[in-house]
Length: 201
Image (cartoon, rainbow, N blue to C red; front, side, top):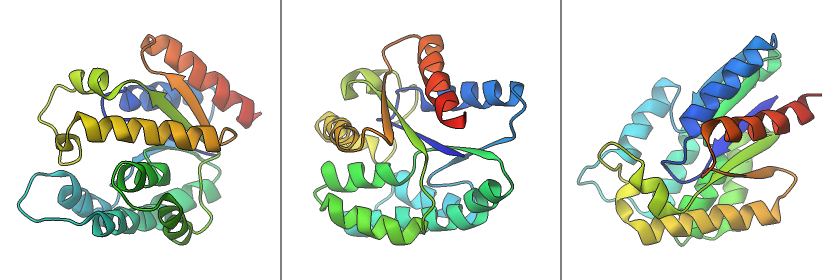
């Protein structure tokens, strides 16, 4: 079973992935966690290009394709083998993030990004996406580090990201679960765990 977590940076994805992984392991499940982009040698190199500040301009379409390349490697090197071994995979971001950041907020056509994504993931999609929802302004205020290249594009862009997530969630209600990230970590975890257990049963 494959689950991914998404939302604007600062909503608490890392915390919720850790809490869900611990809860599932306590129930006897084998769980692996990963991040997109990242979790492979290629993915980490591409993550550095995509998220670190540097002078190299990256067009949105090139940006989208770099994320896709990292994801293709992640699927074949990490996710597909884990699923074949019967493990549960929890990913910090996945294809939905590309659709939202580069299309809804970035100006590309969402349908085009979904189509490129279909080729990229070759059938490997999350059973559920947990969308942790919070205003971009509130989420940004919780980040205790220098902003990365995507975060540095400003609150208007990041609120466009949030609205893109919500738009896709309304379109795909069976795949994307919206969870209020303003709640306590424990309340969010309870909602995530309940949704995960429903599909695991």
